Image 1: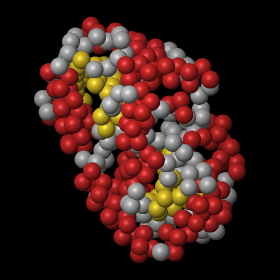
Image 2: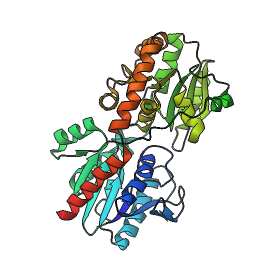
Image 3: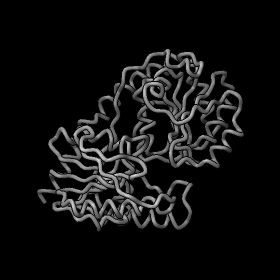
Image 4: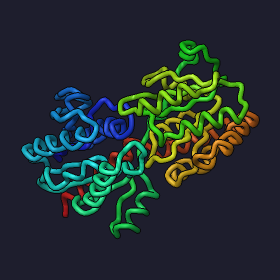
Length: 364
């Protein structure tokens, strides 16, 4: 089928939903689909062969409250002219314009979370996001979500079944320990956290407070600072951090994955995620993973890591101390988590589930 993907900034993916789409593309192509991704001209470039898919850029207004809607408007018009069989919108906020693309066979939309929960948005933006959620439920021919608890919430709130399709992850061989030398770190001699974009819902205030309370002698390494970072908040964190905390910036590639693989523990303190790629990376790395006990995180990591009460520094400090003191138990759980993620979050299998959705929509 001829498929257009809308609602993302583009590929290559640097974090969040862009990483999800980037990872899916070669598998959708291998299933025989002709896929075109519409992205922001400020983020990506045109290509006729990106792992078998086409990338097309559209213009928009690069301002915080207008960026998404203006790019989505132009992408929707371009997709409408392209007469695609299926249009797949990723994320709920772009569904404000779900009525515009008009595919030949059907519209599919995927929720990657409730954006209005995040603390960075003002009242008007949250109202728009809530309106988009209602259109996400009402307009598409099929709707999916990466979070099982959020599927339940949609069913209870709106009375519509939303299909749960999780995110996947690539389970990698650990990169070489020598890559740690850039930060003068020893294997299993540090704690690691990754936030991608740094904003208030990522829980880094809780993490830094817990690090102080834990009395840990190991350094705490925090990667993050990508696009859409709350720079004011980031500066507050850097000004208040104790000596053992190191911010290493936004990272990708082998050096980034080396920090996961060789950490004494990976800590994920976020206050809200639907299904976090960072949490999956931590579990897939085999490092013992400490995570906040939100329903969304528990749906992914229960029994595979060590949970703490969300936004509670003392609870997190106790977990950090426990993992450091019980290294054999922690490493065994990390190894089990790696195997479980390999089974449950396989990209080819996830692409086949989206393929089933496309074909069911086409048949209807």
